[in-house]
Length: 385
Image (tube, rainbow, N blue to C red; front, side, top):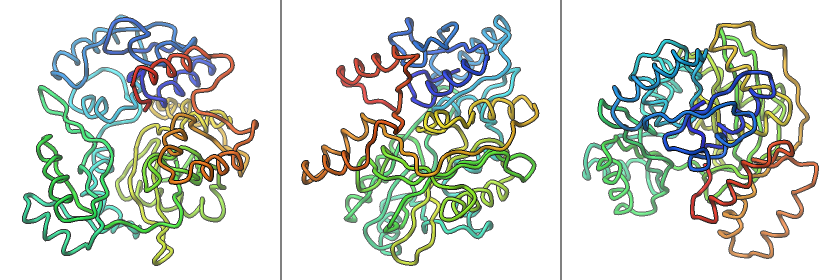
């Protein structure tokens, strides 16, 4: 298990440990307390120090191969886009979860994703890739303000380093658009400018695709995002993956995965447009996602399913889960509340949509130490991911 600071890594460590797997966690600094909650979970049997994957490829490859040989691990699981970009450039003797081959590369290229979506008949925001300021200005003329600027890839790996750019920026002026695109180019990445979808709701879909069929289907609605204008889902509610809006989102994700020839776990974000009512694909994450813990608390065993896929083992049986269950990221909801114009109305909404029976990110009564570590990290100014 790599990337121990990420919430999805903690969820994976807990899930695999409970399922009886031997889980080793590797970080890039000495001492478990310094590298994140997953390293401090009681389900992490051992901790290893590796070179930072965002550094030289050969150094990371040699150290990781040596570790695999010494400990006889069967699969490498990574959750950070930068680490996955590095894994795609090195040769290691075991499978990775997710597989970072050609189909993964196709889905994580937002320029290429526009073509894949068109081939699959899936709505996708109109996208331009401006090479300079002039093209960025013309993109605004074509798409109309406001627009969204982001990197074509979250991470690009070279021989000596990995360049990364997370998230998207909503730009309301031409100058903001040009500056945002410049910033991405300065980081050595390719900027894209997209039309902004005015949305009525946000849905997330998850599948595990094998031989053009889904052995796992799951969906939820995003109740709150941080920032509220569009960002990370911090309050969620399960939807059926077999009927209604959830099924529609899952069906679209399946079509995109098949168009790319992708197998394995994939999560996608969709906005339902206020203008035409269609579901627009925003992003595909062919890896574990930020709220993986929610699915695990619902008994979905999605991490174990992904590992079994990576190892070529028989899939687990069909999944069912309760519809209408809610999940909260308390740290994220604090950011959401700070962004509200009326704190009293924000607090009233939180009270109205939160119950003791809901699930909460990071919280596991049998594994509380990582939560304490998260709280200390936030007090020290480290934002959870």
